[in-house]
Image (cartoon, rainbow, N blue to C red; front, top):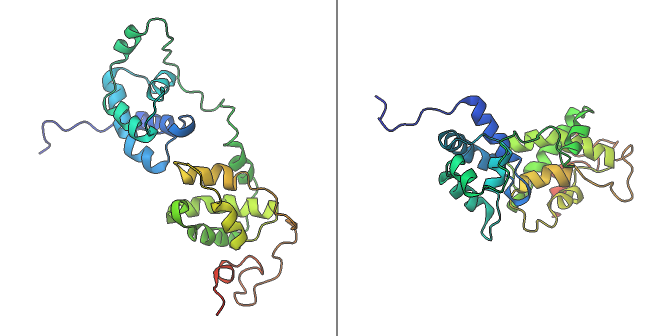
Length: 232
């Protein structure tokens, strides 16, 4: 028997819209996959109860200026979301358009890089090497097996175009200067992989064309095991 106070499950369409809104928030407010999974049901329920559309006005309200850590503030603002009518009445001189967020027309450069890479299919062997390299990342760059599998085709295609082998140099390049990032997986996808520069002194067409002598199924100079091996 269900408890009397149990909330009805969120509508799948609203849940998806809430997830898109959270993932598309600007700057430090942008949510990664883990945070989206945690906050999307809460946001969908709160917005419906308080009369908000999952669009521009709500995004603006949630990301208004603060001196505190954005992720902690975001959860508080969702949990204590006021009624839309009350916010509109309290600020009569401000536009509170409930138009949807312009997801498809956004001019932000980040989505362009993964889309361009996805157009060219990557070699399955290179995808596997890319996955293994991604799983070897450490510290704040550590990825789950699912995330590594998702990003591996993108890394394989970009590395082939920019002349990189799947070695320690590429691994260091992906993990350099973490700075004050809050969502390292997003930074890895959109900047470190999506904007991977050309490797100095290497040509994309000739990198790693010979098989590895220790692991014949991999290419020389692109074998993660050999790159990570510690000399005896």
